[in-house]
Image 1 (cartoon, rainbow, N blue to C red):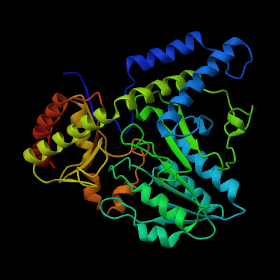
Image 2: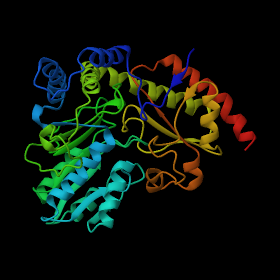
Image 3: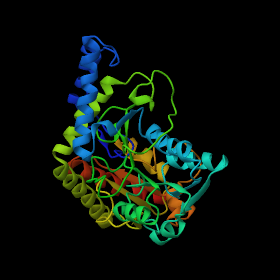
Image 4: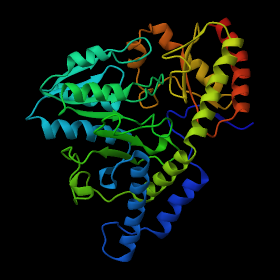
Length: 384
């Protein structure tokens, strides 16, 4: 068996078809989409085609799709764009204590620059306290930003209920959802959930890195963060990354064509892994919601009396790749904010491993992973 990649919440492998699409556009349709000649027109068609695909998936208008350099920029543009555009109306903004760093750090920056920020608490499964949200929304609340699926423990926030609460209390409060871990994994309804802004990242669903999407409802104003040639209606200047946009569209089309089957497949792998580990290894515990309630692709486990980093490298030596947390912040010495805020102590955090699955993973890979963990974990505990 070749390598086993169980770190799909960090990034996913693009298929050969996606790579070939990028290469084809790079080699043949290399024109600037702003150019008036045929090479520019052909390049622009790729952008329009992807916008059409995304609009059909999200049930929105093509003009409401913006392209960015990735999920981080999409989150930054959504939050800073709203803050700068609406600061004269209000300077109160709301998020949770378990957001991705590309949301958390933007809120901290705004807090340092005169905005009032409410950080919502979560319970031991990572769910937002809805009563606290209700009590936090005020007349001058301009933005609520909440992650749909948590990237570390897989908590699926009740965004339909959250959206309803926000709009019932203050219809003018803008609702931003970070859907980077949910797009391509579970259904998303923009209108049903009254979402105004939605962030997506291509490389989380087998598309290329370096390209992201921000859905922006038509009547929402944003101040741009990047200035230049006025592309994308002046909201995000710079020549569009046409090869990546074309590949993103193909990846989105592929993943949504078989969404139900893909979701069932990764959920079954997650269930299989947990049941086998629970049967064969003592003193392991799930972080976050139950297997049935959490996102289908994420399983975060505490291995008691084990240092997660040591276990990660022991698995790596056998070509099995997992994670000790968010890849975007795993190079930071600070413990995971998500695991801290669901009530874990330092020892529990230090023993937590995240497994995350994709449509390309197999039952054979799960069996091999269980077999290797059943050998490695007792040995590491002896030498603790």
